Length: 344
Figure: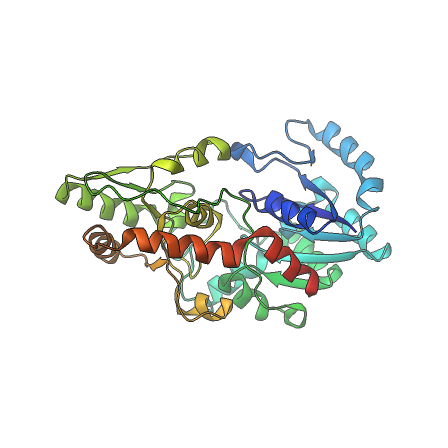
């Protein structure tokens, strides 16, 4: 079977590709911009091209795109007018290609649900959107409607997007949650904790969205109190360079303002870090699990500080690291995730 992954977020597209390839399928990833500064490589990209060259390149790619049996779309925004999105969506529909939408980023439905109060932990509840009329323009609403109308199924990757799409007019297409796939390095024997130097990391990317102000405040309080704790805050680095830092880390603080967690937390778990992220009751229900080794946090500096203090004062962090790796392998291994996607 030929499968096209349409879009890329933090290595998720390439992770899906690796999973489908393990299952014996031919897979290609199309990422218009290469996911920005993360410098993630794809099979097809338009990165660095002028508008005219971008359109010309897309026109040449259309026959290739129409040769695939299945298409997995990572976000409706990849089908903007400037990327010939409506044309491609209509061609997918006319060609009767099996198309699925994977909900894994901001979109019209998520913003609508957040503003209506449906999402208790809404990442934009206390600060401005990245731009005016964020996912509210006529083009964005039309592309969202067209994309959701064309696809056969809408597959949320976490509770936050599941809730949003279940409350949309396309709720009948929404499937169960299928977790994010991550092809990051699996460290079966995590770094043994050295209590003389405990390393805590918080990667800074969209700090307002991730709640970095609460996290950094808590981590600064920890370093002021514990001489054996060191922290660092890598910011906007290419993915390969960013992941090269992980061998040094004991504890990763992902984010604190949503219900679930993203790719950064999964990379950290696979690497054997103790991970702090929201991962609350709603998240557990969406994954159909009763507990998780992730240390659940919220957008509250004191609670993050308390969680970190408890961790660095405990004697079972090495055991927690092993449980975290096992959890990530169980729910986020590309082969497992892709088998589940194909079963829907």
